[in-house]
Image 1 (cartoon, rainbow, N blue to C red):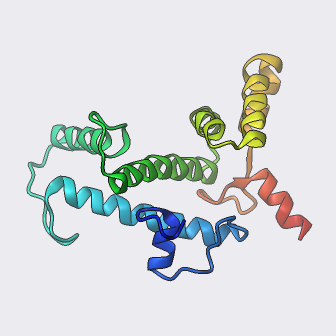
Image 2: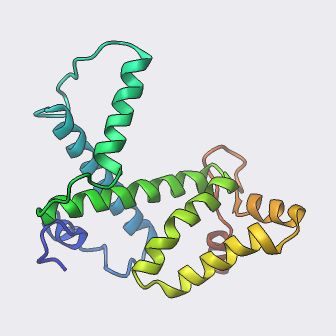
Length: 189
């Protein structure tokens, strides 16, 4: 609800993005809002981890691959992964939960744009517990059917085709893929 601090509805009210409704009837508007919220939350988390006062502050570091890898691991552990010790701060919990889901969403979005079928299926497996836990019965059932068909029901050659034909790129340029169902909706308009 808009009264619950830390919720996306509250953020929407704070920044006056009233064209974004709860049901996300206009996907592009909702998608843009989620991406902007994700970037803002991620930026705030990075500033907190490194003790920065602003995004223009310089992060002192050694220029090595080892530093980059250890920093990436630290960011994942302290940003994406579940908390080591439970927190009583509900705002912080909502922030961490949103970042976790937003990382999954952005990853799925990129996998679709770059037409990477096997990664899309892997992400469906990660989304399944969330779909079940949030009561999205139709999506959860569809997800289970898709995974069962791809892994057990379909012959290998049909499974390969189904995995790699989840997206379409009508322009032939990298990063322009879209889901087949979205393409069909656009044609039906």
